[in-house]
Image (tube, rainbow, N blue to C red):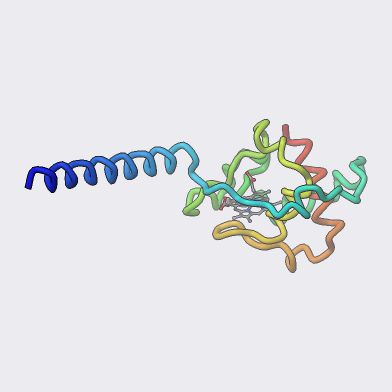
Amino acid sequence: MKSLKIKTATLTFIVSVFVVSATLVAFTFPNKPWAVPEKFEKMKNPVKSDAGSIADGKTLYGTHCASCHGKKGKGDGSKAAQLETECGDFTTPAFQKETDGAIFYKMTEGRKDMPTFAKKIADESERWAVINYLRTLK
Ligand code: HEC
């Protein structure tokens, strides 16, 4: 009987540690890590970052992204509060460290509240231009 009690106590302890850490992780990282396939991670942006592509990207951003991600990319757009997941903050070093290819992948595929733009911005070079604009939001 004694050993059974110990086993139950150990099990309860392990379960509690698991629950507590899962909760902590959930609060620290509101969104699950988003795995990017290697092929995209290393993809080069074929659209030159110049005044023209940044201006195009800005217009597209205003039409398709700002409602959630906010005018300045801080994740505070008018729709953001109604979403289950946080939009993230494009001005942070953590975001700016992501490769163009990784951003391209996320923006093309989408995930949950984040829509897919494969069709809404069907022209790939326009999606790359949006990334050139995102780089100015630091
Ligand atoms: C309806 C709201 C909504 C719109 C519109 C939207 N997003 Fe998002 N976006 C989100 C949410 C929510 C997340 C977080 C998703 C997650 O992590 O599961 C996100 C995540 C992202 C990420 C990943 C951020 C990171 O930290 O890696 C990128 C990149 C992104 N969005 C780009 C865009 C671009 C570019 C547009 C416009 C072309 C756009 N989004 C439009 C809601 C939106």
